[in-house]
Length: 112
Length: 112
Image 1 (cartoon, each protein chain N blue to C red):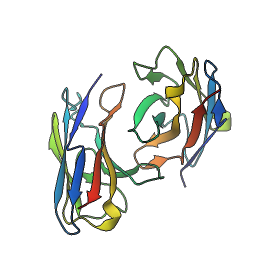
Image 2: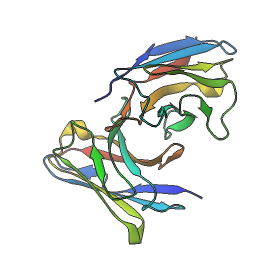
Image 3: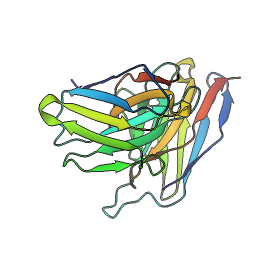
C-alpha cells in the first residue's frame, strides 16, 4: 500500500529556512519520482519541484534559486529545503508520487 | 514554462446536469514517444487532490464513469455527464510532459 506523509514545523519566521520531510512506504524511491506541491490558503496548486528515481531534480522556475530537494533512500525519505521564506510562502505543502498518490499535506505558516 | 489556461474559473450546475471544463496549453503536450501527460484532479475542501483522469482520457481507479477526458496537442476537456453532489469542489488540469510541471488555475464547481 503506497503511503506518503509530510512532516515539519508548522511555523517558520520570515527570512528563515523551511525544512520538510516526506516519508514514503509501499514503493522504492530509486524507481519512482516524488514531487512537492504547495497551496496557499484559498488559492490553487503550485508544483514546486521533484526528484526522480535516478536522483536528478527539477524545480519550478520561480522557486529554483531558493529551493532544494534531496532524499535518503535508506530511510525512504525525501526532503525539501527552501530559504528566505516570506509571508506569501504560507501554504499547505504536499508531497506526491504523482497520479493518485498524495500525502495529506502539512500547513506551514510564515510569521514572526 | 508551459502555461495551462482553464475555463471557466467557476461553474454553477444543478444535480444531473452535464458540464465541461477546458484546459488549453501554451505548447503541445505530446512527447517524442507519443505520450501526452495531461491529468485531471478534483480537490474537495480540506482534502488532498484526487486523481480523476490520467494520460488525457484514462479513468483513475475507482473514479465513476460519468467522468471522461478528451483532447490532444494543446486542447483538452473534462466532461461530467450528470453532476452529483459529491462532485463539488475545484478541478485542476496538470501537465507532466515538460519540466517544470504545471497546473491550471482551477475550476470551482458549485451548485446552482
